[in-house]
Amino acid sequence: MTDTADTIAQPLLRLTDRAAAAALRAAGARWFLGLDPVTQNDELLARTLTAVGATVFGHGDAVVGYTLNPDHPGQAVVDTTGTDPAPLAACLDFLHEYLRCDTFVALVAVDRDPAALRGFAVVGRLRGHEYRGGTYHDVDVYFRAREGTCAR
Amino acid sequence: MRALTVRHFTEADVPLRTAVLREQRFGSNLTDWALVADVEEVQAHQRRLLARAQETVRIYCACRGDGEVVGFLWITDVDWRAQTCELSVAMLPRYRVGFGTLAVIAAQHHLYGELNIRVVVHRVLEHNTMLNSRDRLATTSQVRCDHDSYTVGEFRTALMWTQTAEDFHANLDRLPNRRDELGARIRARTEKVSS
Image 1: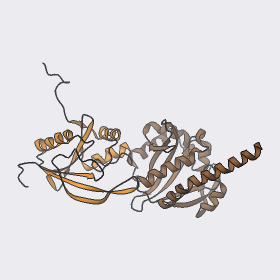
Image 2 (image 1 turned 90 degrees about the horizontal axis):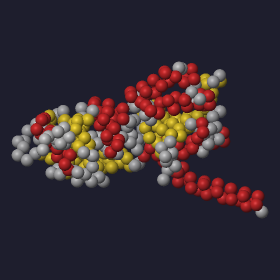
Image 3 (image 1 turned 180 degrees about the horizontal axis):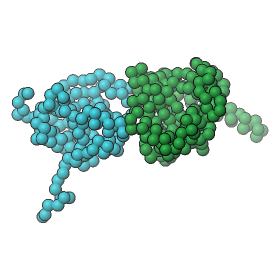
Image 4 (image 1 turned 90 degrees about the vertical axis):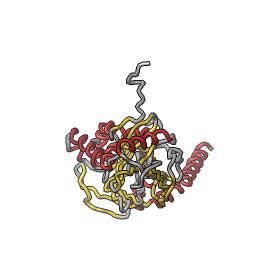
């Protein structure tokens, strides 16, 4: 079989900030990397992504992304829509292979399914960190280090 | 289920809102600047608000269940730390009877429930009884400001009041009672006429 542009796997598709904003709205994803399509319009979502230096990818039906911790270049804050672990795993591989990241942080509200965060562990809880539906919600802080990683 | 929902205003909505801003009664009831400025400037201004001014101004479309836009709402002077803003509304002419209150309620659900606003400031020019009756304006307003603005040939007096999130939810709780009372009055009148 001959490889073609269609048959070569491209699991992570880099999105422009405008495309990322539209994808997050379409996914109905709230608080992805701190963004909220319910309270922010597409222009503001795109501008915020630019301001925080976020990188966002499409991966099948999911959206996945990261921001680098400015105080620790080997650490990234990551997020994904949906509950499939595969898009986030692809993002972590990308971060390790191209940006030498080996520790990862994610914030997930306690009433959301954390199934996508395979290999992560809860290391803390932020009380009343998110506001939606007329009330504040607690958010769990998840952490994962790559196996065999030297502490940096 | 709510009769109307709100969504973010987009570039595609600019021509329709421009037409509303340039309508004579809107000019008299809120501001007539869009009747003075040229159409291009009115449209460019809204695009600037969309792209650059989300920190202080946000515009929403009120939509029916089928997605049709029935009016526009916007918040101005947003103070995120104090959690306050001013709310304005303009309905399309054919949706001005009955839909205005529903649109304001839908917007208030969004402001208090999602945007985390605690206090909404209302400002209505005294002659504008499109959404609030004269009696209601008289009993609700907390501040009266003579010569507040000059629209379509006259100085206007503004009436202002604040509404907290608690006020909003208390009023919502009273809504079914008001609907029941209204229904009973209509039924009584109908029975009297038919007997």
